[in-house]
Length: 117
Image 1 (tube, rainbow, N blue to C red):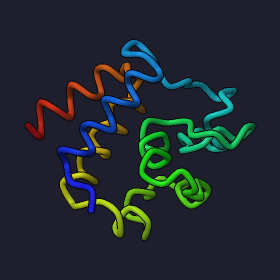
Image 2 (image 1 turned 180 degrees about the vertical axis):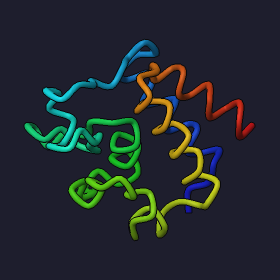
Image 3 (image 1 turned 90 degrees about the vertical axis):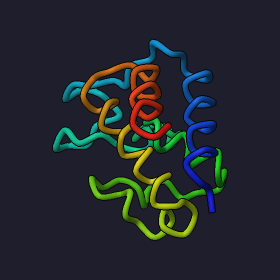
Image 4 (image 1 turned 90 degrees about the horizontal axis):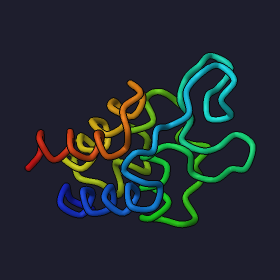
């Protein structure tokens, strides 16, 4: 099981990869939003991890089927429960909430650290 400390390290890796100032694309025309405006965990055009949680999930399991994370309640899906502790899932919820509110991934990481360290 991946704990919160390792989850923070994975979030740091995601921020390093995309950049501290990276902002998840928003708007109804974004390829990373569904037809209802909900954020997606994978890019609907390429299948690549799109959001911060999707990218972290791909680090844990490169073969993860990200389609199963296409719902608002994705963090309660079986894969997350099998691989992450409750605190680790909470860390991802915090990061996802910050990202979806339009904050940078650096801001999302700082929010996680404020709440969990």
